[in-house]
Picture (tube, rainbow, N blue to C red):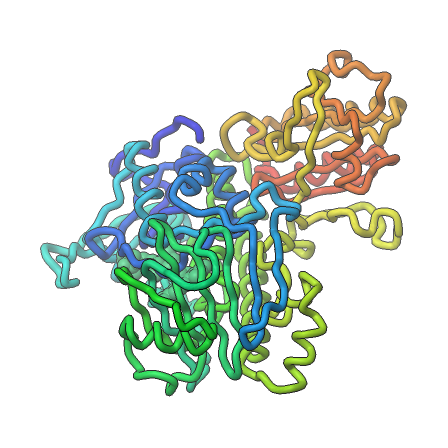
Amino acid sequence: MNTTTASPNDGSIDVVIVGAGPIGLATACALAHHGVRFRILERAHGISGESKGHNVIARAQELLHAIGVRDVLAEKGYHAPFTQFLLDQAPLARLDTSGSPSPFGPVLFSNQGVMEQVLTDVLTERGIQVEYGREVLDIREGDDDVSMVIASVDGDGNRTGREETVTCRYLVGADGAAGTVRKAVGLDYELQDFPGRALRQIDGKLSWRRPTKPDTAFFFLFPHGFSGILPVWEGNHRIFLLESSDAMPQRDPTREEMVARAREVTGDDTLEIEDPTWFSYREFSHGVSPGYAKERVFLVGDAGHRTLPIGGQGMNAGFLDASGIAWRLGMTIAGAAGPAVLASYGEERHGAHAALGKQQVRGFEQLMRRNALADDVIGKVAGVVPGIGSYVFGGSDLGEIEVAYPDSALSEDLFSRLNLKRRSAARAGERAPDARILTATGDTATLFDFIYNPNGHSWGWRLLLLDGGDRGSQAALKGAADLIADVAWVHPLLVIADVTTSSSSSGIDAIHDLDGTVHDAFGMATKAAIVLIRPDGHIAFRAPGDAGQALKDYVHRVAASSPN
Ligand SMILES: Cc1cc2nc3c(=O)[nH]c(=O)nc-3n(C[C@H](O)[C@H](O)[C@H](O)COP(=O)(O)OP(=O)(O)OC[C@H]3O[C@@H](n4cnc5c(N)ncnc54)[C@H](O)[C@@H]3O)c2cc1C
C-alpha cells in the first residue's frame, strides 16, 4: 500500500462512499491505496458483525492483494484447498484448488464481521475514520459534481440534528441491497423470487465423524436439497441447509433443529454443533441493476446485485467491483485518464454481474431439480472438476478467475482469433496469467509482482514487451516503448527469453524469462508481443512486437488529452 493518506473531511473531497459494509470498506481501502481523497458514510453505528459472506475466492484475493489488504485478511482466515462433494451421503468427488492458476487458489474462510473489522482497522491505521450514524437521504447529479442530503441518525435509525448537503466529484453507492443510491439515480430493478425455498444457517463448534480440520468444504446433495459444512473463523464451522421452506419452521432455526436435520442429511448421528454464534433464515430473491454507473455515480456490491447463495459469490463479486472502480477513480482524479476509462466501469461490471446472475439461477434450478436423471448426470460429471462445479453451482469458475471484458471499450487485441497456436492464450480483456520466473540470481519471482503496482505503489499500467526468444525483435519492442515514453503511467518491462541478451544492455527495465514460463503463459513462446496490462491485471492491449504505432494510438485513446 502507498503512504498517501486520504484527506480529512475538509469539504474538498473527490469521492464519497455511501455504506461501510465489506464492499464499501474494501472500496475505501482501494481508494486510500490509490491516494484518493474520500469520505465514507455509514448509517449504522458500527460494523454489522454478522457472519454472512465468509469465503474469499481466488480472484478476489488477487485484487485485495494488489491493494495491500489480502495478507491482513488472511491472518484471520483458514486456507481451504479441498472441496468434498457427497451424493446421498456417498463420497462423490474431492477437488483440490492447490493446482489453480492463481497464487491464491485455496479459498480463505473467515467471517464477514471479522473481515469488516480488519478492513476498518486498515483504514484507521491510515488515519481514515468511517463516519458512522450518517445516512444519505437523496442524491442530485450536476454536470461537474454530485450533491447529497445527509442526516445524522441514532442507533435506532431516528434522525438527530439538521440535514446537511455534501458535494463531491464522484459518488460510490455501496449501500447494499436496499439501495438508496441506486433508486435515486434511476438504476433500480425488480427482484425475482424463488418461492418455497429457504437457506438456514448456523455457525458454532462442530464435532462429527469426518475431520474438522479447517482445510475442507463439504457439500452434501440430498433429495431436493443441498447442504454444506464449511470452516468459519475462530474454530467454528457453518452448517447450511438449502431446501424447502417447509422443511422446518420459517424463522431463524434453533441449534437443536439444525443438528437434527444435519444428522439426517449427512447420515452422521454423532454430529453436534455447540456454542452457536450465528443463526440465519433467508428466502430467495435475486436481481441485477440495469446499469452500474450513471454519470458520476457508481454502484458496487449488493447495491447493484442481489445474488443467490450459489457458490458463495455475492460478496466476492463485490470485491471485484471495489477494485474496478477504485483504480479508475484514482487515474481519473490524477488527471491521467480519458473519459473511456471511467465509462468502461459500468459496462464491464454490469456484464459480469448479469452473467453471474444467470449462472447462479442455472445452478439453483439444477440443485433443486433432483431426480434419477439428474443424479445420473451428477455421477457422470463427478470426477471432472469443471463438470461437478458447473452442475452444482451453474458454472465452473468459482474463483472468478475467468471473469473477462473482451467487449470493453478498453480491450483491443490485434492477434487473429484464427491463429490455432495462440487460441488458448489470454486475449485482451482477460486476466493476465501469473507465471513463476527464475531470475538470473537463481531466485524465483512471480510475474504478478511485476504486473500489479508497477510503479511500486498504485494504479500504473504494466507494458510487457515479450521478445519471443528472438534478440532481433528487441529493437522494435524498445521502439514501441519509446513511442509512449511521454505517458508516465505506462511502465515498460522487457521480458527477455533470448539467452544471449544481457538485461543491463536493454536500456529499459528488463527481466530474464530463463525457462520461458512468461512467454508460455501468454502463448508467445516464439513470437514477439506487446501486452499492456491494466492496474486490475486485465489485458488492455495485445499485439505483435512490431505494432508500436497501434500501441501508441491505443494509449492516447485511453489517456487524458494531455497525459501527465
Ligand atoms: C445469510 C447470508 C449469507 C451470505 N453468505 C454469503 C457467502 O457465503 N459468500 C458471499 O460471497 N456472500 C454471502 N452473502 C452475501 C454478502 O453478505 C453480501 O454480498 C455482502 O454483505 C455485500 O456487502 P455490501 O458492502 O455490498 O453490502 P452490505 O453488507 O449490505 O452493506 C451496506 C451498508 O450500507 C449501509 N447503508 C445502507 N443505506 C445507507 C444510506 N442511505 N446511507 C448510509 N449508509 C447506508 C448499511 O447500513 C450497510 O452497512 C450472504 C448474505 C446473507 C444475508
